[in-house]
Length: 274
Image 1 (cartoon, helix red, strand yellow):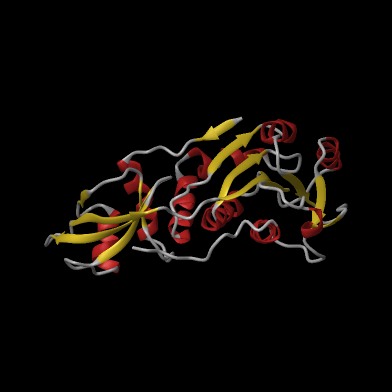
Image 2: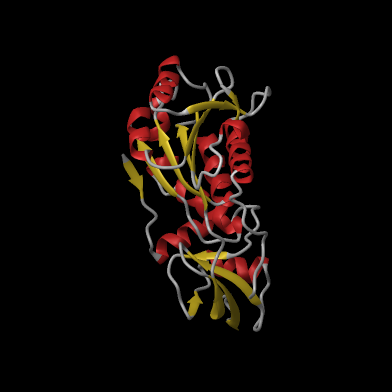
């Protein structure tokens, strides 16, 4: 297994934020890698540019910030310099939403599809994403610029900021399906989505009272007969999401939502005391 590690460094954060500020995605909070009490964002920092040019902050403006894998906070703008540099001071913190106890196991899809999945999974608060090169995946997918550079981190950061949380899902790569299944073995409910050989709909096959779940989804071309056999031999159930054939990213979103609702993982609505 190769675990893709989220590195905590400010330069990396600035680089990733550059993508945020150039996109149309809203930022429900601004994510920082490390906690601070007071910080000055230089004029060329994309986060300062977003605050200055998009949010048009002034002294006294309050914004939400978050610290990766840590607290959510409220920060006040204490200084806006003529060149666009911004100074922030934290005025309160609170616990962020808990991640959902759901891990996704996904046959490595096309990079464009993987980008969407990374964003949506992070925005929904999943615990982790595990990818593997399935029998119907293209080997070139793993060598794409998405995985060879920090582009995958961009998508996770965007999704986490969208979620109004601070949990950045763990991402790991496995060489094959059996290796991934062995790594993920433990307590909880284990279900692989399958359009054609499912034993029943997903809600009916989730183990009642399970405190965690691992949901597997094939690449765009689906599972091979051999992969179905591997799931069955390892005690996984095959389930479906109805008759329509969904895009992989849509199926991921639907599966997380259905699993979280059926197993009562949704504890509260969006709220803040800050």
